[in-house]
Image 1 (spheres, rainbow, N blue to C red):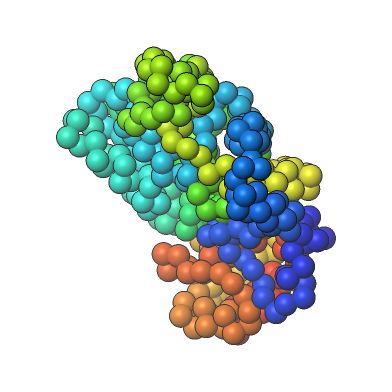
Image 2 (cartoon, rainbow, N blue to C red; image 1 turned 90 degrees about the vertical axis):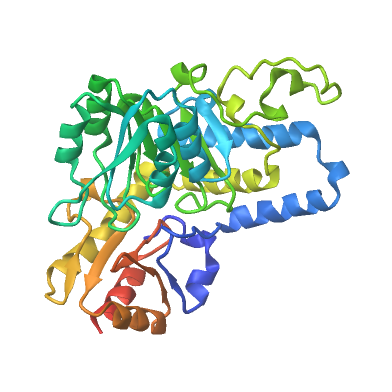
Length: 378
């Protein structure tokens, strides 16, 4: 039984099987209704009070914090993951040295850190292992060699679905005195996580995928002890204490807000974050990351079982539950043919790095999975 099917009547009434949450998460009906309310208010902006906007932003911070085991004071609202990773790259006090990441990472974990070369900070990519998965053993070995100033990895790899052992890497970073930066977008909302326990310094995630929220919504977690250490590369009116009184904005006192809001430098898309709050509340009411993760693991078990019983498909994602989240990647002998069959069957998914990427969510059923597997099997 799916956890959110009642929020998606089009999935039952139509002929589309949506298995692409890793690209874009569809809004629950509750969030759509809330969006319509916000649009109506936005059409008559005199009906929107400043407290209404401020509350929407604060509720979003609280929901995001609850998703990752953080305090709301450690959350800054961002338009996407990349902005949060750029804050880490440009704001952390990095001495000359090396940043480590995995080869095959999503580009947002690469380009912002490649841009630091002029500061004497180089980016080094650790090659994948024989299975084409991140080589954690080699990463941890390199962390301890003395020149590593930071490590940046995705919690869940976007193409293979491999779940990284954040606890192990975090411990190695602490032992080496290196900053630990995590791209969380492919796991946030569908797996439990406690960033405090894991020793993460910066955790960035967009909300438009697994958190079923609008494009342009997301957040960055900055560990509380680093609020005065991270130097925001961008400065605006919204992050200053003097801007708290909208009636008097020209009392120019250069004093940042005392918490992670100091990294929110512009006017926020309050209506979009209002919709995000409703989507996140819907996920919370369905049991939150623990219940959603268990449901998705059950769907994943069936895909793994099917793939392991065939000789024309290779399972790229690890079979073990603890090493996978929502993304299940299958490498067929004929990728183009497999994608054509899936499309003809009404199954929405995408190819990534030579694999079919299936990404079911809490709204999917076992029947959805079987439909996709039937199409893949020809």
